[in-house]
Picture 1 (tube, rainbow, N blue to C red):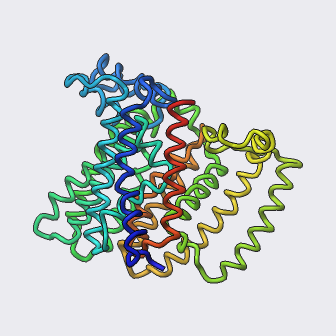
Picture 2 (picture 1 turned 45 degrees about the vertical axis):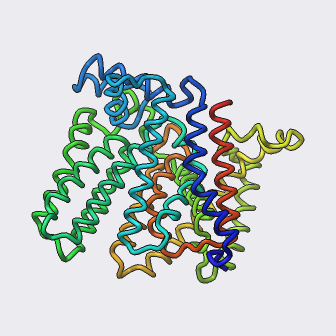
Picture 3 (picture 1 turned 180 degrees about the vertical axis):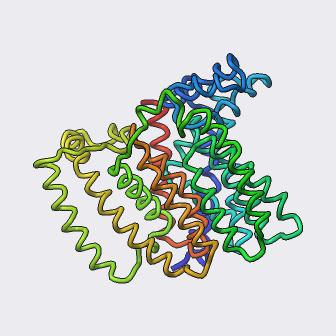
Length: 416
């Protein structure tokens, strides 16, 4: 049951969502005045741009940073306008987050979705939004440029008069996004497929977009002789299928907060029973023989009750890979149903395939895994599900849970 007709609850829900960017802004304004975790790696490479300039030497000397140089291109010029302290960098990153949320709002509006402003703020229901919005990392600027590219691309599909310039700028923006994080290289593939399927575009439009989107990534790949800096090519070689399970496990959790109806598929009861048996079997085998472990969200360990913390720290890392393997299977089953429902809707298929491919790139993050990686797929899934999202009591409860978890996560990052 929706709560739009229950004015008091709906008003409270609106207040909570509108307050989320304000709360995040306050957290950033009072954040610690020192670098935290990966902020060190990315910020420490900024002086390389000052030392070597925009050159191959700069690109080849990047250390401890697998993403491309977009981070340095953004934050190095800020020195000239007096922006130096890390807290001010966080405010710049937060501005990118607010801008990408506004673009999500515009993309929803172009689809004729109702209540687009409130629905775009549902991105704060995903806890990772708070961490990425409050720390100066690489994901938020990258997602901003990717979504800006997508907005112009979508307009180009409908606008034959200005199609070529729109596709050219869209391609350049996508290229900027890719030199921020190579995961978005896959969007060239999905966007080209969408162009081919669109009856209003010809070969010239296809070549313009393909050329504009490829030039910056091509320069980077040719300089590095790979998709990561030379210093990281050894550590980032190979694949890790366990990270693929982790990625879709987190995607499952994010979707459960936003739109659990994604998993209301035919025979869901049968699938859940089957996966429940599989989970117990895998956990027993892991405890007895394999000892494959991973501890997600380690910053949350201090809030686990002390009485059960030893059991949690010992057994949950062994249970987590088994859970994510089952959730991976359930998510893929649901995805296949979603694809079958949308086989004649090119835009929805594009969103589904793009989100899936981006989440799958965790397979190549063989050095480490972070929930930040599958999060990059969420704007596409948010755009896909929002036309069906209703403001219900269930969504309100899930929103409060996700928002509180996000605030706690960021607070613990700041004060770990």
